Length: 268
Ligand code: ARG
Image 1 (cartoon, rainbow, N blue to C red):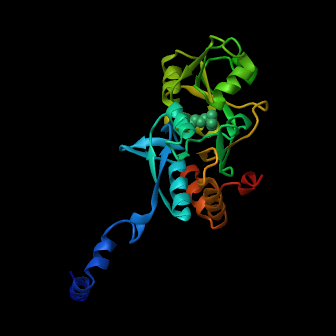
Image 2 (image 1 turned 30 degrees about the vertical axis):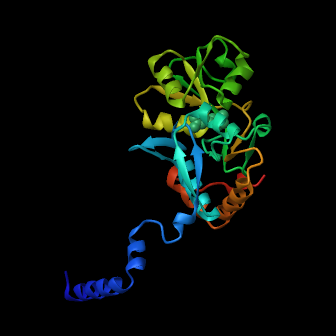
Image 3 (image 1 turned 135 degrees about the vertical axis):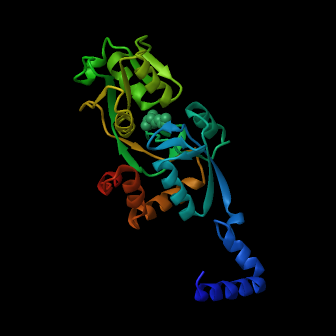
């Protein structure tokens, strides 16, 4: 310790003695007044990297960073739990959850049951298949064993080609189980969201998979989901718009996707 530094430390200790409460508060991560912040209950299905996945027992990912930033902006704290997909949707319907943050695509049908924030990410459906499987276009899913995450737009996309209630489609509770089925050979292809497909391909270089998308898959937009009539929706819309304007969204986007976001796609 240099002399000057020591002197400063002594001076700081002295003022801490005078201002005990203030210095004590400074030790904590969140500043004074944070106890007053309302904690919102958030559900997710955390096997959907890079949007949400478990990292050392914590839910991590693009969605987590974005939601934390939006909550901070709106003056809330969020408690994000890996509830699973179905429980998340049920929790939103019953009002037990305040927010669903899970790469959830805004669809007209879902809008009947939930409220959504302004869009925060553009996505499109992608097919991930085992090398050697003859798939050059979406139509080639016909006659193949296909895996999807139950109740997702990947399922709806697969059904739009193969048909509903077709036994060649296997539905899995989580995105992780869907990818495991591809790995083990239980299915020949899975249908999921582009960024998740590319992340899987990148982080499993030995899995021997290929990815393809198709013009017949329309762009989709993710939104934060709320129970119908939620008071929080307008506040989070405003917060998201602030993050779009002040560059925070772009920063979070670059951290996870290593490129600049196309902000135009979010203005629709
Ligand atoms: N975007 C798709 C949908 O809304 C898939 C979302 C799946 N999310 C997840 N965390 N597993 O249906």
